[in-house]
Length: 191
Image (cartoon, rainbow, N blue to C red; front, side):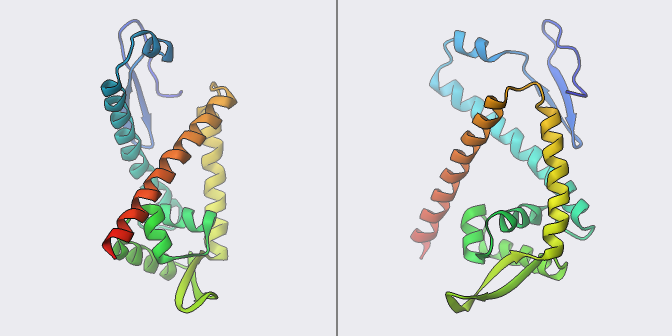
């Protein structure tokens, strides 16, 4: 990847992406399997990598939100992506899927509606409720940005076998569904 230094024998890889600098271990998957990694260490590494992914994701979302609209809060970018992929949705569904509190979702939805990125409509199943969906303009802008992001991922992961990319997507999907299930359980417990 661009920005990586030659690994050498002991030098860690340095990488800068979207303004976030990271250091990567130079070990390989084969190294992990041959060292007899214990269960505790596996979870320590998982937590470390997820934390790094989340930090990077927040930085990227902030930048992408600004690219969609100069007044868009980066935190609302994920909400817009969800609505574009799975909408129309009720705000309560957004709360569960993103694991956010109701006030945060309400604030982000209001901002997206004010910017013309999201439309509100009466829920056909329950006229008292509203459903949210991306507006035509929101979908157009988001599609352009997502295509550029997909091309970036394709370039960054060009050396990865397609099967590894697909496996990563499947595993991340499983992890995300686990988070949604936990959010639904918490919602049920709080009512």
